[in-house]
Structure formats: structure tokens, C-alpha cells
Length: 214
Image (tube, rainbow, N blue to C red; front, side, top):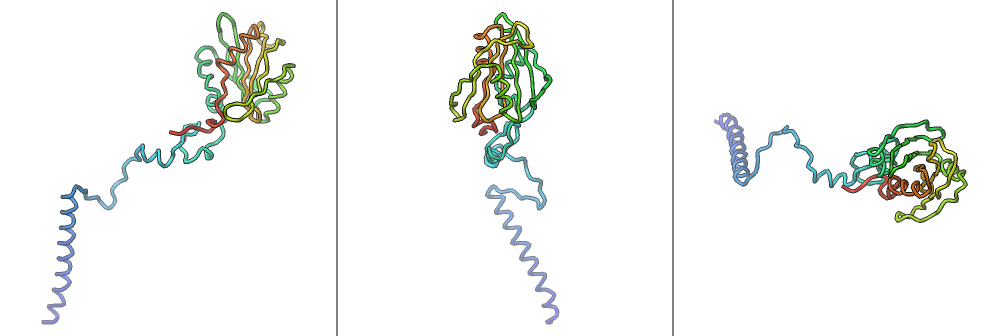
């Protein structure tokens, strides 16, 4: 008799546990829940989750939890980011890589603009003072102004010099002190060069160089 009770007790316990789990499952579903398989595949990450985990988008398109984790702009894609006006210059004319010389990157754009031929030089110098010396060699004294982002802008006034662009012999240029990106404009007169630089040579706010909030 004792042996029979020993065999029955585990069976009754198992039945009791099974009934309890079944009832709990029924109650869960009745309240709007779902029965989840033990190895159910995770769903796609929602846009809300992305905004929380990576609230910034780096200049290269990657998400980040902080702008300090985004790399500095580099290469041609970095150039397009630093100079928002480059896209308009590329649409208006022909842009191509040119002999970089002492530069790490050099892209030249040529276009017909307001009845004259103009040229834009977008460049990156790993040693920013090399670029500064190039434009200082024009003999023009740079106008130094503080930008809204706190950095100092160096703008070389238009000056007429022998250039590889024929009649487009007036040159003006701009850099941000301490940074290697530069842009120069060549045109047939000083005012045209200045206007071309203003229209196509904007240098993005340094606070946005690495990226933007989502």
C-alpha cells in the first residue's frame, strides 16, 4: 500500500503543475497577452529605439550615442559634408579630382556663372598651415573674423594673379583657423570671385562637422 502511494504522489504533482500552467496561460491570453515561443525571433528595432540608443547621425551616415564618437570628416564624402555648397557647384558645372600636390584631397569645379567662366578649388590639407601659406603667398592679407561656432575664419581678399585658369585670374579663398579644409574661387574679376565663394564656398558650422541630432 505504501509503495502504491509513493507511485501516485509524483503523478498527482505533475498533473497539478500542468493544470496550474494551463490556467495561467488562459488568464494571460484573456487579458490580451500573447503566448511567446521559447526561441521566438526578435522583431526589428523600432525607430524609437534607434533614436534613444543612437540620437545622433554622424556625417558618414552612421548612428552614434554621442557626436564625440563620430570621426572627423575625411575624404570626398567628408568634403561634401563640410562644404554644403559643393552639391550646387557639382550640379552647375563639372567637378573632378585634380593633381593634389601638397594637398591630401583636391577637387576642382568649373562652370559658366553669370556670363563668365569661374572655378572652385575644394581641398584638404593634413597640415592646415600649408594651406594658409599657399593663400598668404598671393600677397593678400586675410580678414580674420570669429564665426558663430567660435572658430576663427580666414578669408583672403580677391587678388589678381597669374593662374592656370586664363582670364579667371582673380582669386579669393577661405579656411577655418586650425582646420585643414579650404575653398578658393577664381573668376574674371574680384567681385565675381567674391560672390562665387559666397555662393558655393560655405564652410559648415564646426559644431555640425561630426554630425547632427536625429
